Image (cartoon, rainbow, N blue to C red):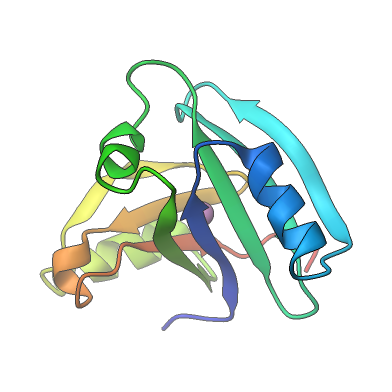
Length: 137
Ligand code: CO
């Protein structure tokens, strides 16, 4: 069973520009400054909200997994929704047993804990990220 909403993933052409939008237009004041995740092909930064986070993701490298998404949505767009789960391997096994399409094997996500992605066809068009709850929560 899914736990709390951890973050909303938003693909953008520039993490810095998107952060500036959330700062100036929406008054956000807390950010996790952008950092590269070469293994995932993305550059990531966070807008910290009182109850959740926005994960801003920008393509890193020519074979970034979000390049196609940004070609279809040049100004950016809502990319995925991330829920926490207690154990990523159990979650992956349960999803597969339920007939869902798990994209790839568990890998370390932007919060340093393992994540999996569930194909949008299984969730009404929404790409779902399941993330193991950080141990310090
Ligand atoms: Co995410």
